[in-house]
Image 1 (cartoon, rainbow, N blue to C red):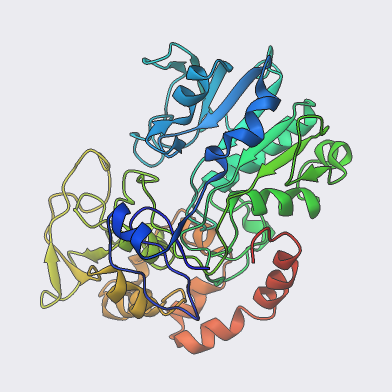
Image 2: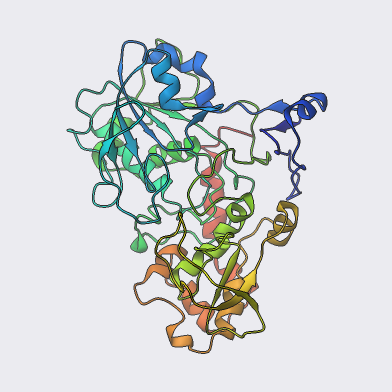
Length: 417
């Protein structure tokens, strides 16, 4: 069965290229079947919400076709009593790392609680008056993209406070491969909570099942949970955690996001390059924030001036970042999605990092001194390997056998072929 979401999704073999964008009528004529996200399967979950006080963890990606999930549920008479928001806020407009205050949603008047900064995990007070929890956020399948960390705290709190949780699953745009160093738990942080590789190849729902099944939560949550989950709920099914699966999706499906997941991932090319180029956040180089191609353009004023020139400046998605108003030189890896995917070849590309370090004149100042690079990498080895001049092949070999072991664990929790 061929599958497509919106304008461009593709059944992959190995790491092939996506379809050219098409309109809906062309899609139907070609005989494709649209992916249905968990949030769109209202016939499955609405009966479980009737008469309940519901809290929703959501952001701007939580759409049911062209309408936000919160608006959709309110229109159907569901009693939404609270909204929780992750990094970048409920409406998704805040900078990376920017603090977002609690408040009220201007459209509905519903209270919004920020689960970021110093308050990442919901408390008993946050859950007061709530019967059922919903989690519905589009992820990009990368360990240091913090939505899976927010998911972990939310699942843990739901179990600790005996609140049933429904996760509306969405496809993973990087779900067609798994790669990178597996996190060393001594470097656990909000940009890496669990021993998974940089690209984990799982949907939000699958990742939640792994958190519970591997008992990676608090001791209290693990005891309460006892892996009490289901992916095919009925109205009368008792539950602690349920996943509403997508329809017509598998891990070979190429998924083009209909809504930007965060301010600096505005194109699919950025989402595909992000696992490789976000590592520059742990260096003095600009990762392209303040340009029209974040995570596709990267460089620094000290690099050779025969490289690609650019000047990052503040914009709506990057009010504060590195090298603003400075002439930078580096690389522009933008292009068509076909060209970007071909360059990546279903792998994290270390060649950018290696080349930048080799060309950088002040090597002692290349990596930031706050240990952030190691947190992104998930170990304290990759930085040493770069400094020692290891080849990409040698570095990749060091990721085994931990990566192979993770892939075996991952298989237990996959909901899709």
